Image 1 (spheres, rainbow, N blue to C red):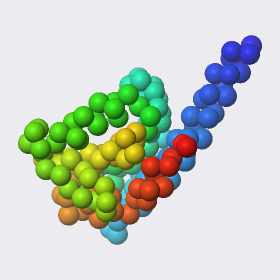
Image 2 (tube, helix red, strand yellow):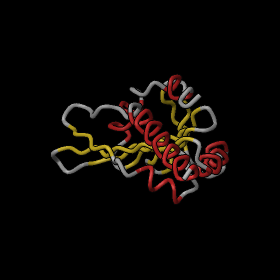
Image 3 (cartoon, rainbow, N blue to C red):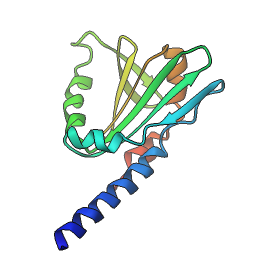
Length: 145
């Protein structure tokens, strides 16, 4: 019984952390709508754990893009090496505020505080970059601490 209660408490804590991480997902830009993916936590369970938040942004013209934020997941560590050697991989580096994002053919990946991965893809950089600029990366870096 105690093990069941601990597992239940762990689930509640993960839900709370996921809700807190969802707050970092930017609002939709003007003319767009935002749809938050509430199943992100289950998907991360299959990828080694951690917490995540994801939103899809759509406009009336049928354009869309997605922003994903993952924290404390083994995949984040793997991405750190890729972002660090972006130039060797033929990727460009883009600045979003003081953060560096790796640009691989319009898919942006940034590593915050070496443990939080922010990714976006789906439409032009002219649309996605201003949305990424609205994230408080300093506060995001302190997430969960």
